Structure formats: C-alpha cells, structure tokens
Length: 259
Image (cartoon, rainbow, N blue to C red; front, side):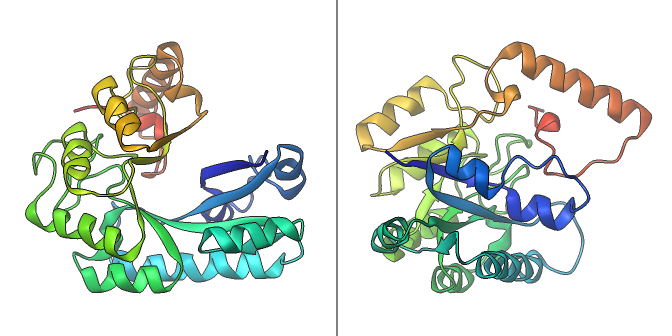
C-alpha cells in the first residue's frame, strides 16, 4: 500500500537552504519509504514586509512546478485522484500542491479561486501568526476563532473542492471551521495533544469531530510534536537562542509556542 505524505517542505528548504545538504527528502528515500503521493507545501513566511505575500507565493508556486518538471521521470504533478492513480500506474510519485497559510490570500476569495485554478488542493487557514480573519495556534487570540470572512473562505473551499487544512490553527478556529465545512476534517501535519502538549497538536474533542466527519489527521513525526520531553527541550533551545539574538524565521517549529 502506498504512503501518502500530507506535507512536504522540500520546495521551501531547497529554495531557502540550498547549501544545507542534510535534507529530509530525496527521490531514492521516497521510493524506499513506499511514498506514492505527497503534498508539497507552497509557503512564504507571514512575518516579512513587501512584496505582498501573494506575489511571493506566486514565485514559490512557479518554482515548485519547475522543480517537478525538471525531474519528470520520477515525480508527476497531480490535482485529483485520477491523476494520482495515473502517476502510480507509470511508477512515478504523484505530487500535489497545498498552500500553507491563509495570509497568501490577501483577504480575497478571487485569489483563492485563482489558487485552485493553479492546481492548489488544500489551504492551511493560518501559519504561525493570525490572519485578519482566523486565529493561529501560536499567536495571541484575536478573532476568537473565525471571523465572518473565514466562513466564506471555508464555504468557497468546499464549493471548489479544496481541502480546508486545520494544521496550525487555534482550537477555536478548528471548531468554527468544522461547524461550517461540509467536507471531512483534514489536518495535513499535526499530532495528538493528549500525547504531547504542543499548541499545534489536536485536542481530544477535535479528534472526536475528525472521527465523526470521516476525516484524517496526517501525523507529523517532528520530535517536538511527539513527546513532551522533546517539546520542552526545543522550547528551552529557542529561549537560549532568543537570549543571544540568534536569527530565525517563522518556519522554525521550535519557536512555535503559546503566548
């Protein structure tokens, strides 16, 4: 049986850390691991100035597609289950695209529709910080979950056939999205909070709603999301780096904590 990976950061890591040879993904290891399909994360940070996130996101999307095209004998772009099966029938790894962070929408449903036309098949509602319309798990509460606009975002994702990804969002946002969505619940890279008390993980009451909706939590194996010992170690490391002014960016999961 093929493994489906819900969230692969390889495009971001290659783009930003091209000199880092210790990458967690390569084609031989994907094949040895039995990965038949994966979602590549199309991501830009949500804590940087202009150009606007939508413009930077378009550049990442284009770069991701070029990367797949350059290695077309092994991966294949896919936007639906038929294309995934077609890729697997020819021995290739199906590569789908997900947009990580609703900040890339620039508060526009028109942009959301454009993303779908470009092949994006899930939208993570927030990243490490709140959007204007949805709260993140790792930012100070602002919207109390979902504003009226995000109900529109969720409904439009349902209409288009785009998954609403609830990884990274606050508990209140999880519940409000599930109240609105007619699709099964979906978390692209989260784990269980009862086992590891990280704010990014999924609490039991939401896990029950995932079960009842026929949804899925695609478990992340990042150590800080798996055990409290690793989470506490990572938090202490981040505190020490803060104390000496070490540079970091919003992609650093060790620094995602409650406020």
